[in-house]
Amino acid sequence: MKSTSRLNISGVNVWRAAVACAWGLALALGFALAVAFAETRKGRAAPRVLKRGRIVYRANCARCHGGDGKGWSALGEKLGVPNLTDAVWQSRRDDARLRKSVAGGLGNMPPFAGKLTRAEIAAAVAYVRTLKKPPE
Ligand code: HEC
Image 1 (tube, rainbow, N blue to C red):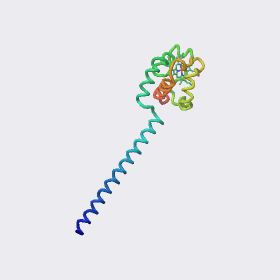
Image 2: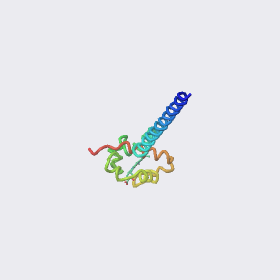
Image 3: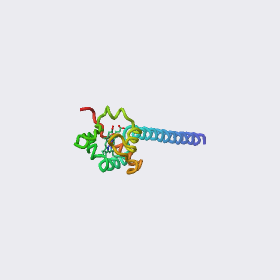
Image 4: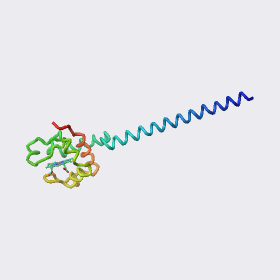
């Protein structure tokens, strides 16, 4: 009788340990996911957004900025486009500023607010961020 109850107690303890383990694992997984999500937000946009941004960029922006974003074309030079791949140039402007410039237009760049949705503009700007290269 006594030994059975002891067995039960140890059985309960094993079960408790398993539950604690599961909680620990769930917490660790949650933490890892949160970090991964934060990284995505801080660094690169989600692949789905970038794919869309690439399509928007190729269709609407590449003629002035070039497929690679450097803008080394006759039209790009004539209009005075910045080198979008320049890491230093990029670091001086946040996403909100770039979205605003694209939506409202800037200098020789026409406004895109009536042509593209906000999501399309945001995706194009997110794609522009991926064109960043270290200085040559
Ligand atoms: C008609 C040519 C033209 C097209 C098309 C064009 N741009 Fe531009 N873009 C320019 C010029 C010129 C500038 C420089 C404006 C200035 O600084 O006076 C510029 C500047 C920018 C900047 C920098 C804005 C800032 O705040 O410094 C970004 C980002 C940009 N363009 C992204 C885009 C995207 C994304 C598209 C497509 C949706 C696009 N451009 C389409 C000509 C163009």
